Structure formats: C-alpha cells, structure tokens
Length: 494
Image (cartoon, rainbow, N blue to C red; front, side, top):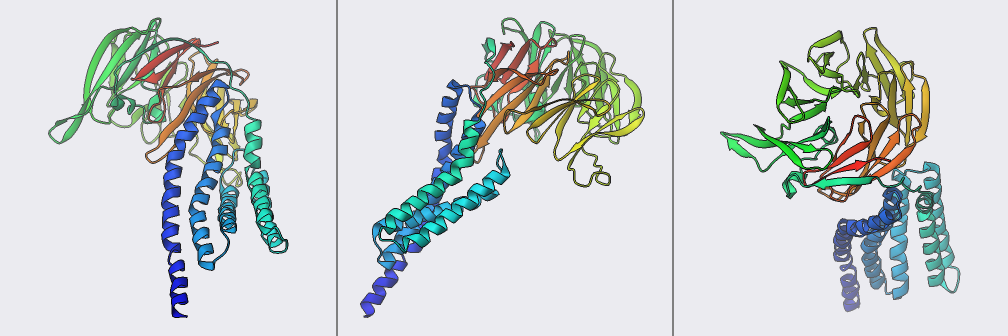
C-alpha cells in the first residue's frame, strides 16, 4: 500500500518539471518564430501583398502553438499520474492551449472588427466546453474531443483568415534609379533609430542629395563621448559622392538637415543654424539659438518653427529672421508660413467622448480644427490644406476644418515619411518588429497623391534599418530617396 502511494506521489512530482520544460520550450519557440515570419514575408513580396494581415495570422498561429508546447507536457504528466490513456492526454493539452488562446484573441487588439473577434473567441470557448461535455457521453470520446479542438481552432483563426483574404494588393513598385553605399557596417545602420530623425538626415538640394550620419564609434574628450558626423553631397542623377565634410560633436547629438525652397540646406548643428549650398559650402546667415530648438520646417521649405518654450516663433528660411507674431502654442506638430498645428491641447469640455484633437494657431489665436476618436500626425501639405491620420483612416481638411477627402490607410502601422514641397505627394512608412531587442520584420513606403489620397507606387526596403529608413522627396515629387548608410537608393515615382 505504501509503495503504491509513493509511486502515485512520484508521478505527480513530474508535473512541475514538465511545466517548466514546456514554458522554456514555448518561450524559445516564440523568440525564433520571427524566422518563419520573415520567410513568409518574402513570399508576400512576390505577390505584392501587405504583410500586416499575414503577420496577424501567423502571430496568432505561433502563439497558440507555443501555448500547446507549454500545456501538452503538463497534460501528459497529469494524465500519466492519473493513469489515463495517452491519446486523451494530448487532446487535453491542446484544449488548455485553445482556452488560453481564446482569452488572447478576446483581449488582443485586432485590425479588423473587434465584435467579430469577440464572437470568434466566445464561439471557440463554447465549442470546447460542448465538446468536453459530449466526449464524456459518447463511446468515441477521443474522436469527439479531437473534432471539438479542431473546430475551436478554426473559429479562433477565422477573423484573421478573413482579414488575410481581404488584404488588398500594394500599388506597383517604383523604379529604382541608383543605389550607393555611404559607409558599410552595422554601426551605421544604428543611425536610423527614430522616426523623427528619419526625415531629417537626408534632403534634396537642387541637383544634389545631401545626407548626414554618424561615421563610426565614439571617442572621448575627457569624459564626454564624441562622434564624427559625416556630411555628404551626392549627384541626384547618379548617386556619385561629390563632396564631403566631417563635423565633430557630442555622441548622440545628431545634426539635422532642412531643405529650403530656394535649393539650399539648413544644417541644425547643436542649436546653430547654418545655410549650405548643395556642394556643402556655407552661405548666407547663421542663427544661434539661445534657448529652445528648431524642430519643424514648413512643407514648402519657406518657414521654420522655433520652439521658444513657451510658444513658437516662425523664422524665414532665407534670412533666419522672425516673421509674423509670436504664437502662444508650444511643441507644434507642423508649421506653415503663418500658423502651427498642435495635437497636445484637448477640448474635453466640449467633446468629452473624443480622444484626439487638432488645433491650429495663427496670429488670431487658437481654434479647433479636428476632433474624433483618434487622430495623429497632423501636418500641413500646403498653406491651405491639412492632413490627419487615425483609426485606419486619413483625411485632408481646409483651414476651416471642412473635410475635403477621406480614405482608408492600407496597413496597420504607419508613419508619415515626408511630403513633397509642391504639396502634391506624401509618403507613409509601414513596418513591424518583433523580439527583444526588436528586429524589423519588413519595411516599405507607399506614395500617395494628396488631391485624391490614392496610392500611387510602393518602395520596398531590403536592407533593414534599426527602426525607420531615411526618406525625402524631390521638390517636384517625382523622385524619392530612402535607405541608410549601408544602402541609400533613389527611386523615380510613377
């Protein structure tokens, strides 16, 4: 009798190690699953499909499989302790994984209909519970349990299959004119670490493309790490490097570029604005900020936004002198010749159910331009038109707040990646990442027509940056340059 008790206890002692084993194995699988996802993304590239819906489908499938890896050893050892047959042990392991997967589907943000997702999760749980009850009442219990698990899995995956089937094709690819290597090495790819910097490290200047990046590992001056930032001027027609300069500055304090409407470049070098010719020689006035920063330039390249904290002062990009009245709003999201847009002031008293507000401030004061459930990245496309994104939609508005055009955004995660100076085209960057530290799974840009909000062409990135590739339009919107120091490319747009 005592031997039987000890054998039973020994069987149950296998459950905790099985739980730890399954947990570690499932964690390893989840961290390696991005390799499978990258392979599938290459397949979507040949079919010109957006990878976002496929990643949602693969993410759920991999997560449920990882759950099954965790729960199956537990169910198997528990069944071993209870002396059940082997087949039901695996079915119970999958049932536990599907129940946890249903909770995941219920709570996970979904790019399609949340109601459809909740219905699928609830139906999956109902099928599992019904199958478990029925398996105890019929002769073929294992087969019944298997059918219930299969139907529940299909129900959980159904919303993602529907989304994948409805994924529209991307517009045709843009024609690449040239590609060039500015500096080869993994360190240089780390220079594309923020969306803010991505549109300020490359710019057009007449017949040249100007780029700036960190040229290598930092050195020290005393206790201060210092970097050599390399400024290059490339022929816009061939990609050949024509001129080069080096700027020594504090590590992590990247100088930024702004393209003006007269074919020059403004270099923001640690609070000092310098006007440069396309060949990188200095021209025109200098302007040293005694406080605040210059973070924005108008789409047409005529006006800078000096964030004086508090408020904003507009600067003429030719003379670097203040123009117009000092505006009360700080941290503008975008600037024009006479006004700034903000998204950090809230009109909850008037619209308590809304979460996103876009305000416009000019010499007459501030007024509400747009409000809704969500809205981000408000930007002037010209001095009379504003572009807003949110909830998978995009809108163009006039300065009275009237919606001129509305369209769907063809992707789940997007970032504004530039507007041509003539205000006719804009680019959205789409990407997704996974892992810790995160690795980009894919990246591509879609070029849109401002007047119609219709997609025109696609620019795909093969040499992945850390977070976002550099990007800039030519003033006429006919060319688009993107990449990083490892691979900078210019495309002709259809």
